[in-house]
Structures are given as structure tokens and as C-alpha cells.
Length: 369
Image (cartoon, rainbow, N blue to C red; front, side, top):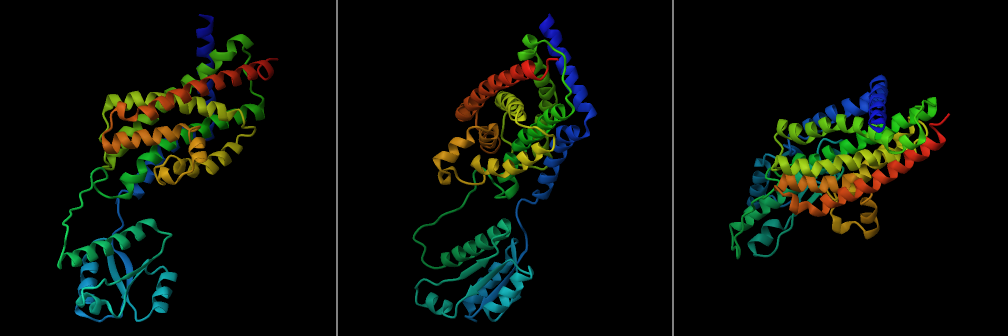
């Protein structure tokens, strides 16, 4: 009974601490609620439309005009400018009036007439990934369509299986949404820890009780808040913006339980290194993008070295992002993501033990008068 009272006191004390700190409320409530809406709204169009390009047609033939007509008819791009040489086209790219150049050489029609391979050069502004995708894929599609009018040894039809829209939102947003939970916890819990160290706000709790009971009380406060935030991010936001969501409710629940637990104990562990409340923001800003890359959602795992793949296993977001995307985009069951599922439980156990050790040290050296 005494231990339960200690847990309750720690839980209540943490909720009071959270409610009185505007910075923590910003990270615990505003960030998980607003950021998913902002990100989803920005990428809700899924694909770029009417991307302006420059056409350089040195062929001046019927075939080159046919290519330009079909290319311009695509909904993804539009031929906004026609130039006579490359220097003029580069000038338009430099002014950001266009994002790509289509160069048709003088021998384009002659090569087609001789049934030899014709070439079309494409130059893209690589700083805009969606614009590059629209320009390149449209050119590929037009070339395939024009090539199909001749001899075609093999007929094929492209049918997208999972990301049916071929959009950036369905591709990257699910991973970002899951990462937001981990980063928001890191920010909030780290800020609370930094505040305690700065103000020397320590609760008078006996050492023996503080070891686990105090940590559990604080953890329950975080779990109570972020269980709601996690449901909002994984269930409500994708449906609000029409993202592909093939996940089953029970499967998602069983998967997200260890993910949230791992994130909470991971945040408590990291918070032990936070000395000032502002320093945690530097940690999160520095690690957010690398964590997204290491998860394998925006960069193929085959291109990540074994060392960095090993480093990625330290973060709950790695397993959380991989598992959630496979469940939401591909309809995977729990058995299909058992590697990620058991990985999260292992992280939960490891970070729980580390959190207990941290609170034991705090109780012995910091929380005792």
C-alpha cells in the first residue's frame, strides 16, 4: 500500500509539473497535435502538379513535336519555356522559373527513322525531389508510350500495389508521424529533467521507495498523455487526410504498446544526460533527421552500413517506423512484423532497467536531504 501511495504521489507530482511548465505543455500537447496536421496538410496533394520545365528542341521534327505535345499534356509537368540553347535554359533554372530542362538533340528523328536508339537528355533541379520525380517519370512514360507504337517484344502494365497514389505523403508521412511521438517525449521529459536540475526541485521520498515507485509514477503520467497522442497520430490523422491505412485495430494496439513503453523509458534514460532544459532541444534537432534515415523509410537499408544499422537498433523509432509502415501501407499482421515487435519489447526491458538504475542513483544522491 505504501508503494502504491508513492507511485500515486509521483504520478500526481509529475502531472502538476507538466501542467505548470508552458514549454513542456508545448511539446507534450501542441507538438503531437499540430505537427501531424501541418505535415499532412503540406503533403496532402501527394504529387507535384504542373511543374514548369524548359524545352530545347534541336530536332524540329514531327517526332520531337509529338514528344513535346505528349509531355506537355501530362498533369505533372508543363512546358513553360522554349529556348534555343542551354545557356538560356540554365538562366531560367537559376531564377527558379523552371525546375528542369528537356533537351532533344538534332538527330532524334533520324535515329528513330533508322530504328536505332534515340536519346533525350533530362536536367533536373535535384533540390526539389518531388519536381525531379515528376519531370523524370513523365519523360520515361512518354518515351515508353512512343516506343510502344513500334515493335514491342514484351507488353507490360504498371500497377502500384501498396502506395497506390504514388505520392510522397503515403510514402514518408507515416514514418514521420511515428517519429514525432518519440521526439516529443524526448523534448518534454528532457526539459522536465533539466528544470529539476536547474531549480533543484527534488521530492522527499525515501531511497528504497524511489528506486522503482517514483520512476513508475512519472512513467504513468507520460503514458497517460501519449497514449492519447499516439491514437490521434496513428488512427485519426491518416484518415483525415486520406492516407492509405490498411492496419487492423487489434494489431495496431498490440504493436504500439511496446513502442510507447520503449519511447517513455528511452526518454527517461536520455533525460539523465540533460543538465539544462534548453540543451535537450539541441539533442532532438540534431538526431531527428538521422533517425528518420536510419529507419530505412527514406533511404534503403541495403545502402546503410552494418555499423549504422547497429546504431539504429538503439532507437525505438527504428522498429516503430518500419513496423507501422508495413502495417498501415501493406496490411501486415503482427506475425509479419515480429522482428520489429520483439525488438521493441527488448528495448522496453533494457530501457526500463536503465531507468530504474537512473532513479536509484538520483534517489541516493539527488533526492535525499
